[in-house]
Length: 269
Image 1 (cartoon, rainbow, N blue to C red):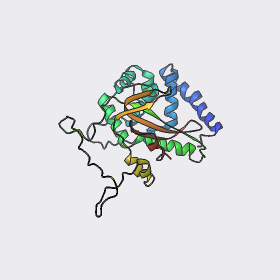
Image 2: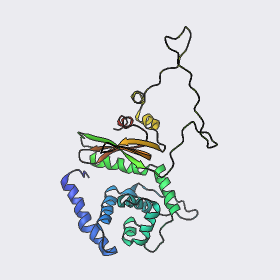
Image 3: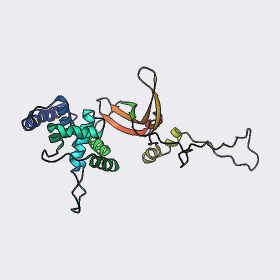
Image 4: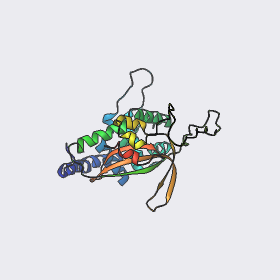
């Protein structure tokens, strides 16, 4: 359905508020405002519909991936920093376990199980597919008049990637000296290397897949001016978002923290 229309949005809101939430309150007890926000988010994105089971009946059956996907969504909505914190919250919060789909009679999966599931979701690009389906379903036929584009820092606990000049022994070596460029016109028969093409100029000749493949995605160190005008540095990545007038993020791109925002403007639809 076209959920951008006000009457259909209110219809879905009333179903969640007057049918789903009372049923859950009767089942698990009182729901906090944050848990109600988790319920609304899970009902709108329906991430379990994009998760498939890969068990073929050999060996120990894996934990239900749909439950783990719901748990990762709840982790983001509740603002839990680590997977260990999510597991601890699931172990003590009966309502959250029921919302995510975990049976109350079974033990919460271990941290290694969550890590394996997270790797599978990242490999199959689960968040991208869910976001693409939401945009096509609810805004596919709408005309977007304006886009607000910006990048935000994503802090990471991993170490920044080493430069190409670092050797395998763990010691940093000095970069090789570049040949000095001769001044003036080249001599007859002399071949000089072509000028390096700027990334923005190179992007104009590439397809979307080529531009995305050319983006740096490793963890490094970035610097950016904050809202107060002061420079802030961090280790990790940078998230670039295109947001429509209605406040819905239309496109998202994750890059290295050092990449300039201008390089993410051309690939964004």
